[in-house]
Structures are given as structure tokens and as C-alpha cells.
Image 1 (cartoon, rainbow, N blue to C red):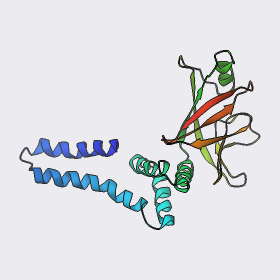
Image 2 (tube, one colour):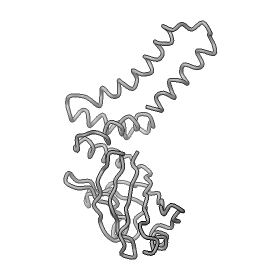
Image 3 (cartoon, rainbow, N blue to C red):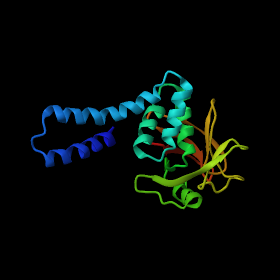
Image 4 (tube, rainbow, N blue to C red):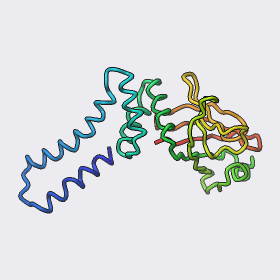
Length: 205
């Protein structure tokens, strides 16, 4: 929505500068035209045919257009329908995005900074949070998972697995179950190299 308002302002401003006599009616027409652009995409996502709606979301997520991707993610990741959320997550991962993984230290005495530095080559900040970027590199159909460049210890390159009954991530030695929360992020706990568990948040949007 913020991007839409920004585009609206950019579209209207030149007209105001070039012609001070712009009427309220003309201005309203320009505003309506800009607002309706977003509505047109939302209409596609709300198609009564679930297959067409999910296809529209997948195409928008893979379009490479930041505005379309944002609209599709707003619709899909925050949907009350778990099937739609799962489809949105898969569509996002299919586009091979760069994601940020946030790991949180719960006990300064459990060796967290050393463990995350060893595993991900990242530094823990003053708030006890370590941020590790990850690039989704594709999908392994045989292993039924999305691959990524972050994994260090796995015997294959699986990073995220999305199934109807569960979503799992592997950031180290083991698979960890995560869930998609209402803020458009995957959250849960992962095991560090020293055997300690740490809260994890993978921001999707």
C-alpha cells in the first residue's frame, strides 16, 4: 500500500507543477485511476476459481515486479486460509528470493555468538541478534525441498520444506519445524552447533 501511495504522489505531482489550473475533478480521476490499478490485481487474486486465484498469485510472485510481488504477498501470506498461505510461500520460494534469517540469543553464557559465527560467519549484535542472509537457489523435486546457499552441515542442499501438514527448515545439523505467523515470517527454534536451541525468524516480506 505504501508503494502504491508513493506511485500515486509521483504521478500526480508533475501534473500539479505543469498546470496550476488542475481541477478537483481531474485530480480525482487521476487518483481513482492509480487506486484502481491495485484493485485490478486484487480482483485477479480474488477469482472465485481457487486454481485461477492461486495461478495469478504465482505469476505475480514470479514477475520480478516489486509492486506485484508485494500485492501478492500481502494477499497470500496474511490470508486466513492455510492453503493460500502455503501457496504464497511456495510461490515466493519459487522466485528464488534473498531472505534474512534472524537468530536470537537467550542466554549469554550458552556460547551463542561463537556458535553462529562458526555456523554462518555472522556477528551477534548488542541486542543479542545474529542476522544471516540466505539466497534460495531452487527446488529439488526428488528431495521435495527448496535449496539454499546457507546450509553448511547438511548432506544435501535442502533449506526449506513446505508440506500441507508442516513447514521445516534446516540451518545446521537437523530439520526444525517452523510456522508461518501473522507478520509474514517463519518462526520456530533451531539447534546450533553447540547443541543449544535458539529462536529463529525468517522474514519473508
